[in-house]
Image (cartoon, rainbow, N blue to C red; front, side, top):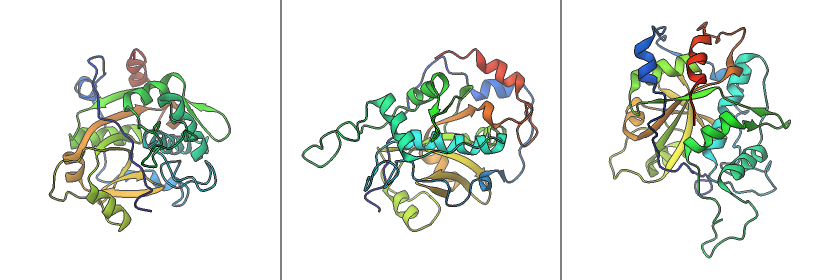
Length: 270
C-alpha cells in the first residue's frame, strides 16, 4: 500500500490579484475561534474514501491510483460542507478522476511508459483547480456540480491565521512539501511530525478540517493528525475557500454570518 498511495500537487504559484486573508482580517472584526473545534465527525470514519488518490475500485477494478490529491481533497471538502449545510452530496473516485482529467489532461487509459508510469499523470496546480471549482464546479456521484464562491490566500505557515480561517470556513486546503517520513508515519497510524532531513520536493494537497490535540486533515480516505510544527515547516500554500453549501440560512454551523464576506469575495477575478 505504501507504494500505491499517490501525491500529485505541483509547486505553489502566486498571483498579485489574490485576495489575501490577512487583508480581510485587518479590515473586519473576526470572531475568536475556540480552543478546539471542527465538524469532521459529520462524516463517518469509513466514508471519506480514497477518491482515486490510491487503490480505488470505484474508478475501475484493480485501479492503483493517480496523483489527483487536489481533486480528492476538493471532494472531501465539499462532502463536509454539504453535510454542514444539510444537503449532503456523495462522491466517488470516478468523479474525482473525471475532474482531474478535465483540468490536467490525465487519461487513466494512456499507455504506460518504460518505467510503468502513466505519462499523463502529472499532478495539479492548485490555483488551476480552484479556478475550475469556482467556474465549473466539482462533479458528484449523481452528476451534479458543486461550485465554490471564491478562495482567499493565507500566508503559508501562519498558524493563527490558519486557525481563524479554519474556524470560519469549515476547511482550509493546504499544500505541503511532503517528506518520505510522513508516508511512514501515515502507514504507522502516527501524526505527521517533523523529522530531520532534506526539504522534500514532492507536493501533496490535503484539507484541514479540525483542530483538536493536533491539527486534523483528510487524506487517503481517513483523518490524519499533524503537528503545528509540521504545518509551519512544510506548508507552501494555504487557501480559505468560501462554499455557499456550508451555510444554513446564511450562517455557518458556528453562527458566523458570511454575507458581507461573500460580497467582498465575489469581485475576485481569476
